[in-house]
Image 1: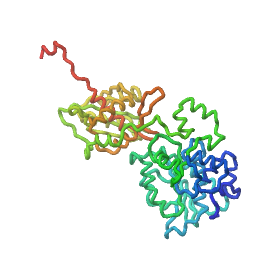
Image 2: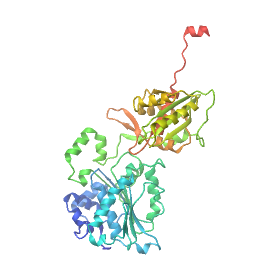
Image 3: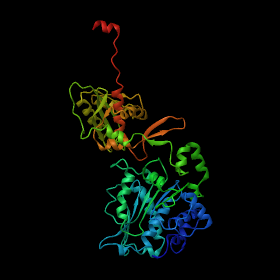
Amino acid sequence: MSEISILDAMHDPALFGEEFTDASWDAWKAFLAALLALPATETQAELIRACTGRLDLPVSPFRRAALICGRRAGKSRMLALLGTCLATLRDYRSHLSAGEVATVGIIAADRRQARTIFRYVRGLINSVPAIEAEVTSETNETIELGKRRVVIEIGTASFRGTRGYTYAAVLCDEVAFWRDDTGANPDEEIITALRPGLATIPGSMLLLASSPYARRGVLWKTFRKHYGQEAATTLVWKASTRTMNPSFDEQEEREAYEEDPEKASAEYGAEFRSDIASFVTPEVVSACTAPGRFELPFIRGVRYRAFCDPSGGSSDSFTLAIAHEQGDITVLDCVREIKAPFSPDAATREMADTIKSYGLKSVTGDRYGGEWPRERFRVHGVNYHLSEKDRSGLYLEMLPKMNAGKVELLDLKQIERQFCGLERRTARSGRDSVDHAPGGHDDVANAIAGVIVSASTRKPMRFTAADIARI
């Protein structure tokens, strides 16, 4: 088995051929021919050139590949096939130290999503009795082939969680949508952390697969660097859903384009979105951050403002920000975040106590929950005023002040992470909106934007002629 190529295994009915008999898999066979530098038919060669942007066919196998394909194109099943073949058709024992195992890692935006590929892998292994017999241990997240010293394992999309492994392959699913709570660019950090683990096994593979999203991150950079380059060391395969899966419902795709052309062109056309851009750069956030300042205490005589983003306690955080004006600078004094799950009433009481500790009797917030936030804050001695702007409006009004360096932020990681994770989206009408990326959070950033805008738009006192005469 160890001498059988992955493409042969895809054809061989004694291995995995029964799973890929349908003609809709023909395009994926062309991809494998390109990845492994195998002979290609004229039809396959034409498709390889169209999907890679290359004029010449590959002459040597790739150890790195990026599958930029539309949704339902078959990416996850192809990753599963590659991972299964690399785990079961090759012998890594001569490259392993005593007690060391070769890992085929499966990484997605979260462990639940990674289980999709894992289930495909399990199904392929179970479909071949000779390979199934090699399984010595199995859990919901691992399959161990003890004699081969190979483990197929679901990993965590974290640069810390991926260290310390020796990898035969890493299957990275929907990499354009990776988010975590440790950094502003988790996809790039994770890929960087993976590379040393792939270096010790000859022929190890790093496989990225995703429908495209915004023009940033590791998938976009890989596309920019390697697509259409004859000497590229990473194979970039970019194809629409129906190119790779002709059986996909054409009506479903047509309706998606009618509803939202930009979104559909990314999800089904495999085009990076031109209507989404980063809202604020890390450099701007860093320039506005006071190093080593985590909170400022209450000072009598200072006029504070408070803004909160309430939550019901099941998923989103309940956040609060307090700030004051110092000349033309808005200074952030305090940030509070209560992460779900929590008791809404207990969280409201805690936020109210913090608000009152800064000498305030009122807070501004969004329209979440109707009367509920106002009622609960009143119970705890704080008046709740509705913000005149929605979160997108707050961000758009805040940005010029941040760009001008007229804000002093606290040195808290979640502030940098959430601001850098915001996206500006331009609708067909030309109207801009701002929100967090899919899978991201902006509860802290929203409260800070609210307090910056409310503090900087405080109406000045106006005096009439009669007032001046009395003075």
